[in-house]
Length: 74
Image (cartoon, rainbow, N blue to C red; front, side):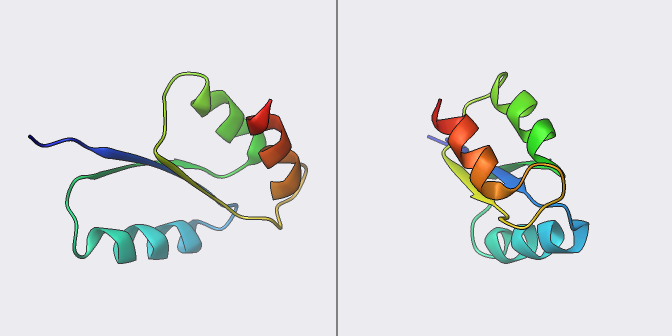
């Protein structure tokens, strides 16, 4: 059975998102990636989809990773 692993990558730098996607995709094809470039965007995305893993940058403008993490836990 081909089940996908849903991963949300949250980072304000697109190059970091691309590096993570490349590294994770090299050896495993069943990853499905969603991306967010801000904390607010991430919180909207998680309302509509469940994720197996969320990779979260800490240093971001407006809403840092700690604030996003606390909001996700609620």
